[in-house]
Length: 175
Image (cartoon, rainbow, N blue to C red; front, side, top):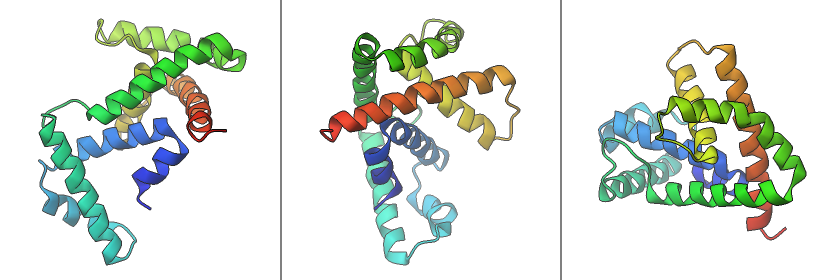
């Protein structure tokens, strides 16, 4: 099973963030599958047949990105739809699940701060949480310092996304 498939089954928010990273990786290598294979896939500790499947998966994602005009920026339509589903589910849980409401309320300050910093580009709290976690990942990957406020926000976003994903998986799997 590919990492993306596993993440999709286990945590929808981790899957979305993993796919954001995949989109950026494909862009960083200018959609050159040979380069992605040479510098990324080749180093995976798996058998050659699995590396071939992984390369085919990257090709599929790259082709979809080109088809959707995402060469420079943006996210796959599938990911946007999943983020919207999570957003709708967030609204449901805020009305019906007190435990979630408490977790969400603890993240509200950080969500509002990030919304304000986006100058009106972002207002969806779930998308703000996804972007916040992904932004932290990018900072760490690039060796940039992460201040305490950012860490606190990422922790709060992680709590929201973890609970939301757990409930989403339960609902999706019919439990």
